[in-house]
Length: 209
Ligand SMILES: [Zn+2]
Image (cartoon, rainbow, N blue to C red; front, side):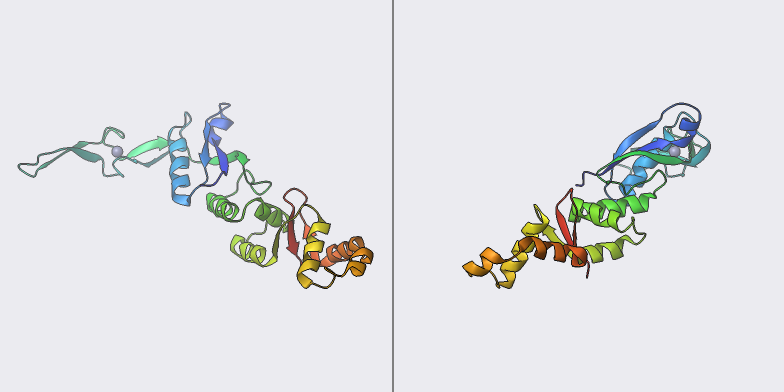
């Protein structure tokens, strides 16, 4: 379950000077679309008709079932008064959001919102930093792949990352003279000139190569 949410506002209501909308959890696309449709159908400023969600446009619904005769009693659907359609407003905008950093705009599509929420749920806030660094790239799948290649974990500082890298190389550790005179600051500075970059908020380090 992701912590990503968007506030969906009905535009017809907004343009008429009243606020109608709701926060929805960003899970899968179908569930989000259902929630948005429900918000639009509940609009005080309907401007279109949509298929009735209760009878699915068949105009009738099952009222009862006789288990002895096997007969099913059907009658007009009450939700749509047997019309098959119900009033709804048509357009919405995202007026607020949580858990997406700067990746969501007013008219970001639900498909994109769902894909971003999935990537953030899987890779955490570091993914937001990476995506922002890439200017909110169009191709989310490609960005997830690039993220997986570049991500080097989260570090308290650039130097902590650099020290760990040296440990792994095993060149300096255990050699007390080398340890004493090695210029960690210069080494760190060089690493972060072009090979790596670190996001201040999350501490995530990414390779540039
Ligand atoms: Zn109906």
